[in-house]
Structure formats: structure tokens, C-alpha cells
Length: 455
Image (cartoon, one colour):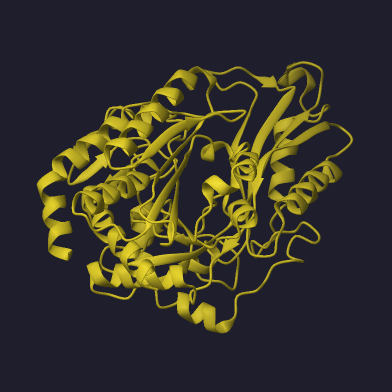
């Protein structure tokens, strides 16, 4: 069957790529209301492609926000069922001036597809659609397959939890398979065994009731930008340890064995710094770079603004300053607890010279999957089959807010099987996805279904 799968893929690889590019041309930005029609258009195209690839049924289903696309191919109710989760929405493309080409005009260069959503997550979830087609057309599908492709992952999946809760029977499965993550490299394949949780807030600091002349009032009135910067700076100590009381109270520390396992991942610090264009790295003292981005919680400023930012000079003491701040969380930390802790702390440390309006945007819980589960073993064996190496288990630094909800509502374990790379510029200008990785995913996924069915 390996030969039949590979032959079918080789015969259709140009079409497989062209179909992915068609998806990438739709600016399905869930965060912006002006793209509401684009979101619907993208959902409709995903539905059609599911049908074209062999699903018995596929439909666009409504939520209180952007719609969900559901599809299924049931070959035998007695056989195991795999639920594939992905998302068709993408991050905003700004700042546009930093893109080398149009974010929604896919360009192929050096074997890579440059476009918003190429790796996160259109290119990755579409591997599963083409893997389904490959198995159906070669009459080799050994599991039932369901697809849950949502349109709000990039804004925190605010409506998917209620959708899943209302459609448990429709989504019932034996395992959930997600390709919305990365691997170390094509030479050193890996599988994520967990993702971090997320707490995302915004804080607005207000001083005077209007912008003031910085000469007339400077030195006599608190500057909201200065004060906000001091508040943010105080969140870390000299060892880059988070200073909020109780922030680490619920953290489950990684065992020495787990840290040793993570240490097997190849890492070249010089290459790492060079690729990012930085002279030195930064992070919590006592942990390696891979540990800081995987097993440790963090707080980062995602955006900050205030005052005059236009061309030339305007000497004002601004009335307001604003920042967006996110915390990445690790197992046993609660996004609700951390969000309230972060909001309360920022309000408490603000001086009386300003007022603070701080509020939550969205959040999600950390998630871990056991490496001794049937799903993980099937994924590991599949990767070993096509890469020739046993994948290294690692913890991903990103967040997929819906994971804990999916397991809670459906009682099903999640397996992460990503084929992206850490340097794919997710959420950044010039996002890209290697065509080799795309094809390798389509080649590998059928083996997951075979090995999971055999178990």
C-alpha cells in the first residue's frame, strides 16, 4: 500500500499544491469584521474540498461567531474513528510593509510557500484532506474520519466550546489528531506532547484628561507611557523571574527525566541567534532555551502604544498609554486564575497619579498527552516509517485553546502531529511553509490511520 499511496500522491502533487494555494488566497482573518464575507467564502471552499476528497457529507455549521466546517467519511461504525481538528482562520497580516510579497498572494520561492496561513493552519490541516483523498482513491482507508475545521482559533475559539458541547454525538471519536504545531527539523523529526495555556489581557493607563504640552506640564504630571513601562518592567526581576505573587504556585515542575529527554533535541545556540538576528538570548535563569519556551510559564508584551507616533516631532505628554500582554501557562496553571491574578496585580501597582482599565481578551488551558497512549504510539510509528527516525517528544511553546475543552467534552485524547518548523514566521510577516513538509505530511498521515486501526 505504501507504493500505491506514494504513486497517487506523485501523480497529483501539483493539484494538491494548487488547491492549498487557492485556500491561501482567501483573506480569512477572523479578528477583523471587514473579512466576514471572506470567512464564509473560505468555509464554503473547505466544505467543497472535503466532499471532493471523499467525505460522505460535509457542511458549514453556524456558531455565534464564524462558522465551523464539519465533514466525515464513515466506512464502518465498528472501526475506530479519528477526529481531525484544524482552523481555516488566520492572523492579521500587518505590518504589511514588512512582507516581501502580498500576504494573500502566495509566492513560491526556494521550495517554500510564502503566504499568511500557509503553516498556520491552512497548509497543515489541508494535508489531512489530501491524505483522506489518497486513502479513498486507493481503496485503503482503515478508519472512519471526521473533520472539525473552525474559524475562530486565532481569536481564542470563543464559540467552539459551546458548539462541541451541543454536538458530542456528531463529533464522537476514538482519538483527536491535530496538525497545528511544528517539528524540530526534517532531519530530526519530533512530536509535541503538549502545548502551553494562554492568558491574554489589555491594560489602559490614563493620566490627565487630555494630551498636554510636555514642556508646560512635564515633570509635574504623571506620564502614562512612563508609568505603564515601569509597571511592565516590574513584572520580571533581575533573573527574569516573574514577580507576581503566587504566579508559580500551581506550576508542575518538569522531572529531571523529562528535562533530559528534552535535552536530546539538537540545538545550536549560535545558529539560533543568527537566524533571529540577535546577539544574546534572554530568559529565566536556570533553564535552557528549549525549556524556557516549552516547560516554563512566561509573560510577554504583545503590543504597546500611546502619545504621538506620526511623522516628525510633537512634544506631548499623552493622556493614555495601552498595552496588550499575554502569559503562556504550563500544566496545572489555570488561565482563569492567572488572568485574574495578572489583572489584579497591575491594578494594585499603579500609582495614584493614573487610573487603570484592565480587562481580558481570551485564554486557554495547557494540555499534555501521554506518550504511552495508542494515538501517540501510532503517530510515532508513522513518523518513523516515513522519516526513518523515531521522533523526539517535545513540548510546544504555543497554545491551542480548544484542546482541554475537546478532551473534557468528548473524553478523547489529542495527538499533535505537526509538520511546520519553528522558523515558519507564524503570526509574523513572511509566513511560509516548506512544500517538502507539506508533501511529507500527506505521505505520513495515512500511516497514522493504518497503525491506529491495527491497535
